[in-house]
Image 1 (tube, rainbow, N blue to C red):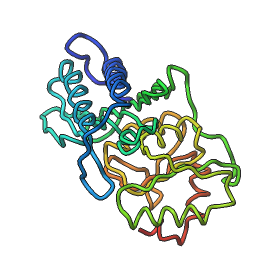
Image 2 (image 1 turned 180 degrees about the horizontal axis):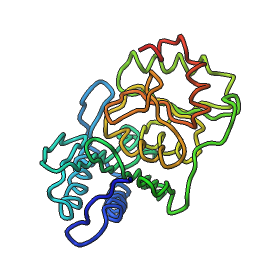
Image 3 (image 1 turned 90 degrees about the horizontal axis):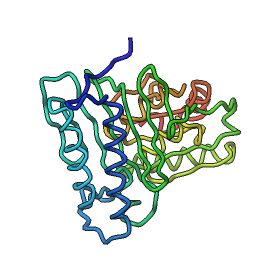
Image 4 (image 1 turned 120 degrees about the horizontal axis):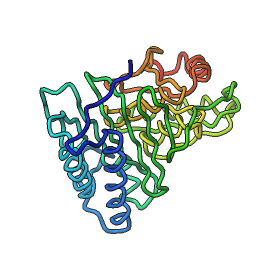
Length: 271
């Protein structure tokens, strides 16, 4: 039986609340997109701007008005424990390096889990006004239109997406893997947002997407988007990925199996 969250304080569903919160913070991100940003470094290539912090505060305010007792796991503010089995998982701005460089490819992640199982998730692309939404048992949609993962049957006919993440060694393995795939795929794309990469695979834009350096807020909405669109998200052992998975191979079951076979023996798959 699919999980359902209780109604919010105003009587609204969690689905409506997350959709409205994502669109509202998306407006903030658009308004600030072309402004100068204050950048701080969390790692060599892992940055945070004042807009990340502002966006997270805005999302948390919207969610807590409706569900004050739920726990929170957010990229910038960390974990807020709760006695509730429900927990919001939030990335206010996935693709911060793109955002700070005026590259219009980034997204907002808001997902809801119960006992660590994600059953509702939104990935919102503010610049394209595209909202990828999935709820367990209710399918996955893009701006309200049902979406499905790729129906391609051969990896050689596929557009493959991937990203490098924040670990230099794993990013290097990903580049090596990409070189080994080429030219026996139609194209390889590295665009700088794990959340959008997972969403695009669920929508069939990418036939397959892979990543090797994920955090829970990167993968959260992707888990339910994949499930409800007919895709799988696998870890390096070929098991279903979870919130705690750092690696992900996202595609149809058929293409994921072909990818695992092609990647066998690679440093990436054995990292």
